[in-house]
Image (tube, rainbow, N blue to C red; front, side):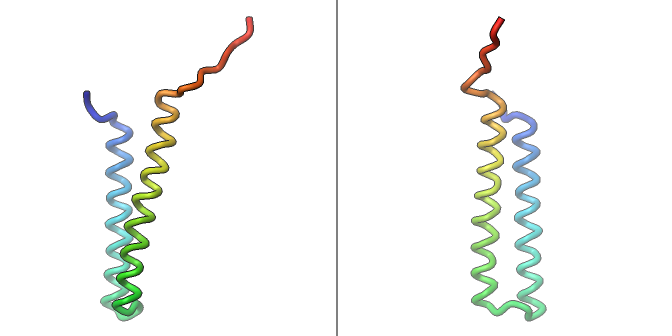
Length: 75
């Protein structure tokens, strides 16, 4: 049993998104736009929001992949 291709692709894209956002926070810290405390908070926010949106996307995708309720057609 393997991981479906769209799940692997979406997971990879969310990993890239999270890495880019963490890179932006790191760059903001280096340039002095964020203090150390604010950068730490931003890191936590980026990680939690990336995981949460990935989990929401995964649940929505799986719900459409194998629906539990099928339409009943009248003949």
